[in-house]
Length: 137
Image (cartoon, rainbow, N blue to C red; front, side, top):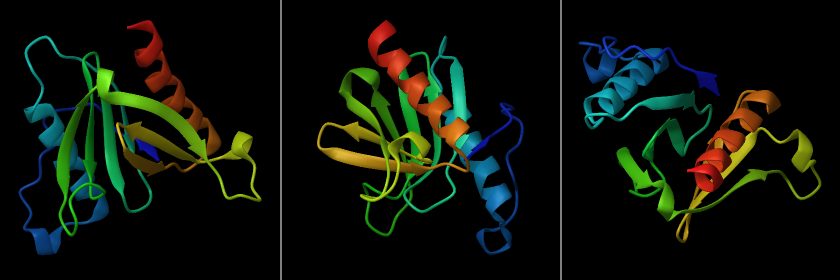
């Protein structure tokens, strides 16, 4: 997972066929900025490194994800109020170590969204930021 720069002016004008993963992430980030409400602030943005959740942004009001988990064969910009997030977890293989996990699971009601992170520190940062919003807001 990569923390992306928080700059709303990074939209791309490339065609879909010309896009690279970095350009897609910038376009996804632009879509998130375009959908912010007045007074809403971004607390953190994280880029996934596997299929499922491509990008997750946490604002002071909700969780926003660019993901392909909820819509088969399509990409969605999904907004979830923190009140609908039921849990957050580290995911590891059955024979692996949860303490060294680089995957974060975000459970929204009955759907589990997974974000693959590049390293343990980024997974912990995302996990802790979500937990903070769940218990401190």
